[in-house]
Image (cartoon, rainbow, N blue to C red):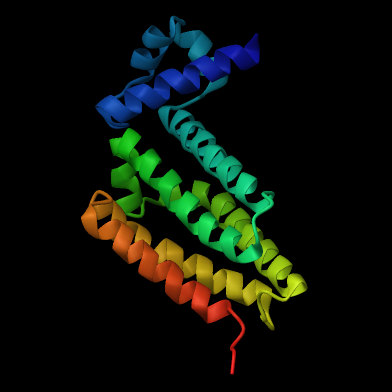
Length: 193
């Protein structure tokens, strides 16, 4: 019962934050929309910021689930790498289009987002490392330092986020993303003579 209530609170808060913004959403708003009393809400989340962190954390878990499916897929390492980048950016686009207050927080590098996002960054790098190692093992890639390469790829991909979000994933987004993945991908493929 407690997990169902927590899930309900998160869904209600997610919608309220998306529609009204975090600054204009009160704990009373969340309690009323959840059909709960304020005391009950405070048993689950002590502050609005705690609730916001929980909402963002659940969104990040959803992104990680999508990425894990790519990593565990039967695609070749080359296709897996390209698909990973595409799915990651699609997940981010879905998130910021669904929740305008998160869009603002991502654009302004809000410390609360960056703190919560650390887990996403660590896991994304681990997934990229896994793909690169798989490529090395199959002979598709020839990378001396998969960890460093994954870190560089992740930093590059993450670096495009503000521009894509700012442009609302507009017409130049797909062209830029294709160029980014082409540069990253060709940089990790073995050189042919």
